[in-house]
Image 1 (cartoon, rainbow, N blue to C red):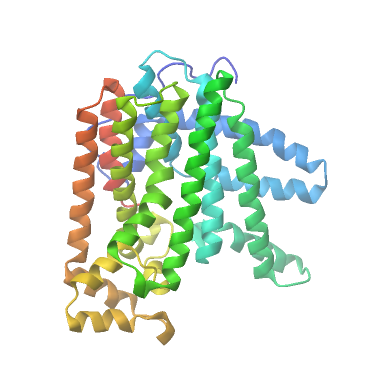
Image 2: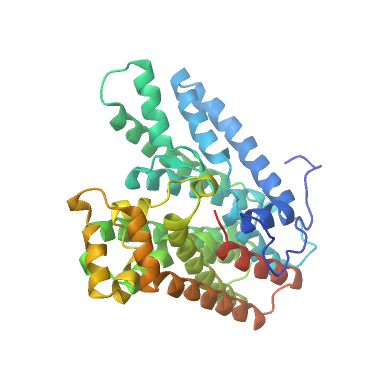
Length: 384
């Protein structure tokens, strides 16, 4: 990277409470991680520029395909995973170590995230992401507009799968560029691989749950949250950051990060469950009620079923996707009446409290501790 880019402590101290506004985590990240986000985005842009050019040499169409993959990576997003990884690293090394050697590794997590998002959108048949058409929808539209042979929807899904695959390969390539001792990079890679396996496990359970809701439960929904979201959103990025700093074995810092990451990651997903039903689409970038329309057995829906009266359960059962399109507004109201929304909100607060307790008993750099406190609150009390 160019020498004029940030090399020291990139981030200002985060507040202990979320910044006011419609999107607290976005505000926290925008104000307090601006330099990190810029550095990660520039690292990604520089890396992918070379990769897109190389693929364009194969065929002009390949250049367009690679550019679409690049645009998926750079199309907004809060860079939550690189941020947690940064603070995991900074909490171990303190405030003076240069960040440049680990920037490729931090940026790697955003490529992994894009891989997961693009594939997840295909599996969920999602039409929008961050207020824009999802990759498979956009590619299907291009196919239709060009008047090509075959089914446009099928083409879009196939290309989206390849876009996700390419992002996974790019992630591996970029991680290898981290300027770390070879033995440390091997350890980093072990944790990174485990994070990927856990993400796939969580995604499989998520897909399975939609086909077998009768055998699902709040505990099983939380297990999905643990592996699909907590692992690769907070917990593993924190541990990834610690491994970049050379922390391993039985170091108490890893215990604290594991406890904090699991708690905040689960709370993050529970917040997503609420936003999926009650969020403002203009803020979340996705239609409200999608989970209810598909019958996804989220912790919120499973909790509502557990707490429902017989009459309320009959309403929830009439939302069965086999009987036609559910009345999303009615289902949302019934879930509030069961007390499920309030219970989920308390579960979020309990997990944040547990996460902050984990930080209290760990030897974490004080600046990192303040940032992680602010991020825990912001990530779990947000509107997008």
